[in-house]
Structures are given as C-alpha cells and as structure tokens.
Length: 153
Image (cartoon, rainbow, N blue to C red; front, side, top):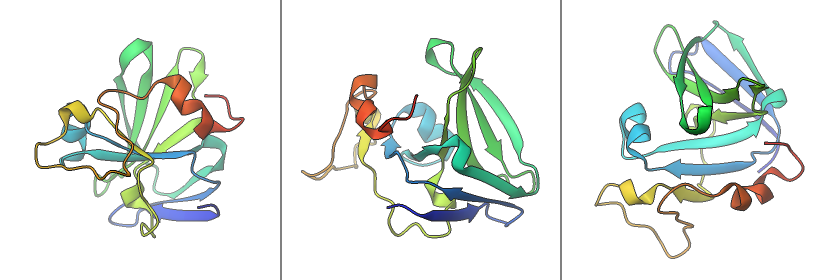
C-alpha cells in the first residue's frame, strides 16, 4: 500500500506523517521484542527516513546497542509513554530507514507482516498459516534487499 500515512501516540501529543511506500512489515518474536512490546511479538514497518515527519510534542529517546555495533534510537511520547519508532545508527550515521510501530498508525486495517523473524522464540500457542513467510532466526541481508528496491540500507 502506498500513499500518505498518519499516526501518533496514545494521548495524541506526538503525531507523525509519512509520504512513502512501506519497504517491509515484519513481526519479530525474539525475547527482546517480547519484553519491549509487553506482548508475544513486536511488529515493525520500515519507511525511508526522509519521508517521516514528527509533529507535536518532542519525543523522548532511549538508545540501546544491538548486534554488530549498531545502536538503535527509540522514540517515546513523554506524556503517555507510547513507543513510536526506532532508527538504527552507527558511528557513520543514521541508517536511512525508520522502523515504525504500526500499531501507532491511524489506520491499521492494511497492516500484515511480509514475514516473521526469530520464530524459534515464538510463544508455543502461536501458529503460522501456510502462506506466512517464517524465519527461525533473523532474515539475511541478501533476502532483505528486494524490499529496499534502490534504497541504501
């Protein structure tokens, strides 16, 4: 789905708009995402960073280190605590994609994961359909390339 997307935090203090096509949508079942989301998995919707614009109250940020020296900057509403997005970065600068929490979109009716990662950590009651693309661990960079279609990652 392409077009203009809007969304925001639970209380409405932080708002955003995006003018781009999502590059990928995925569900991550790793234990870290379970803890961060407070649920069985977390979802992410990747958009080109230059298409993402926040308005309203300035979000708070939390930075954590990931694998391979990458760090991730996580934004939260300072009033209600809703997590809005993440952006990976290295010493060389920001990775040009924003990882949006799709539950913050105003319209979530179209959101469906392209694939699931870290399924080896999924909760035992989760069942995938025959149509679902499932990776027991992380998806390789080579398999991600088609989602970026000309964007540098």
